[in-house]
Structures are given as C-alpha cells and as structure tokens.
Amino acid sequence: MPPVIDPERCTGCGTCVEICSEDVFYGSVSGEIPTVAYPRECSHFSGCVSVCPAQAITLRIPLPMLLVYKPAAEDLENPV
Image (tube, rainbow, N blue to C red; front, top):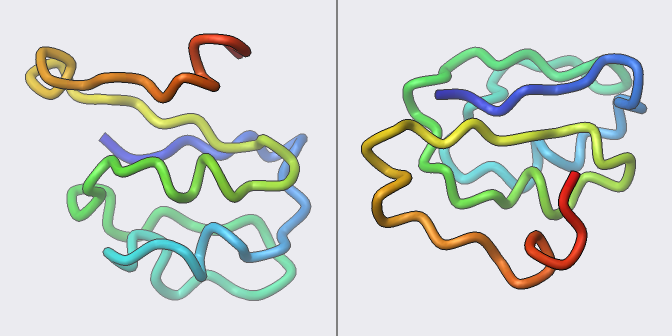
C-alpha cells in the first residue's frame, strides 16, 4: 500500500521524492504535491515519512507486513 500525502499539510518541497529509493513518486513536479505513481513499488521503509518537514505523509503498512513490522521508537513516543 502506498504512502498517503495530506494535501493540506504538504508544502511541495519534494524531499520525499528525493529520498524514495523505489521511485514511488516518479514524475512528480517540483513545487507541487507529489503523485504516488508506483504504489506497488513501495518498500515501506518509511524514509519519506521521516524526512517530511511538514509531517504530511503517513504510511499504510499492508496486513501481512504488520506481523513483522516494528515501529520506530519515536513513533511510539509521538503517535499521530
């Protein structure tokens, strides 16, 4: 499942586009809200979530991955 971008919080800085190693946001235009072009390519490593200065991205972890997913310590301390 792809990352979800909150359009009201997103500033269009493009940091998530730059950090994504899987090019999930391929074709996104600088200065605009990124487009999730390849949702199935998302590896769920949360890079986009952690670098977003506006905290506009949430990551939906697929159910089978929840069995082995361990949230980062800061996620446990500051739930959204």
